[in-house]
Length: 320
Image (cartoon, rainbow, N blue to C red):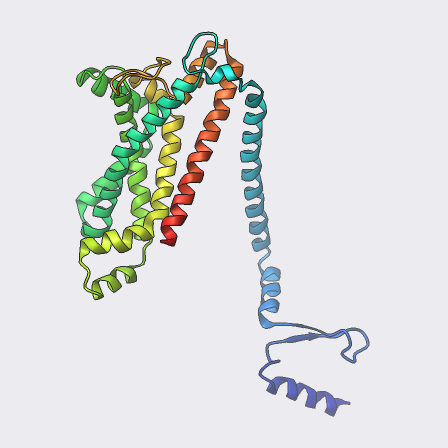
């Protein structure tokens, strides 16, 4: 019996297909019900046995994901339940009155404010990121100053931007409380965000793409606009989506720059409130809380719609 076992062990050790397998036999000892585990599976079980902290880390990761998803779902459901019953036809009247507290003028002002802000901030932020990644020399002190300034501006409270916009755009430039004053204030707010996200997206593009383009005879500018930028579009759009969310949800800065007039101005130099500011005014008066909840639903749907359209656009551009 010992000789047969020794011969079987030699055969298993000489077989390259079985040298990394562990055979678990059932109680009869004849191999019936045998189960083979590969070396990778066995190594994984040994790793979990040696490092029990990995199981704890996995549990904390799943727990954090579940809590985050549950909070987002709770917020969405809560806003919908509170606001949907009060989405009445009067709330969507073309003109605002003290009786219907229509949100249509504020919705139009929000759309205008978003377009004007992004039309200025997006090109500036993307081109600044292109300079920092593609043209600026490594270790340049000026580049370091720009990055520190952008990170500092990202952490400034919005009320400070509002006071600056009121002192500079409203008072010094004499634009008054207007959409253009609010739009330029929002440009200063979202410009660091767009610039930093665009910079990281451009850095994520492999250098092999650039080298291949140069090897085919393309110049620097052509490589950037035909190879690098299309590859970085998903990351750049992610930054723009975040900027859109901040523009739509901003209230403090626009309170001091755009004003609270509940109508669509005749030009960009007229005053008008956005959806978030409209909701703030209704809730602060404490007379139309139900309409404020309905306005929150419209803001949520507006943001989800823009994010969905931006995601579809990013996928189409990525596919070419």
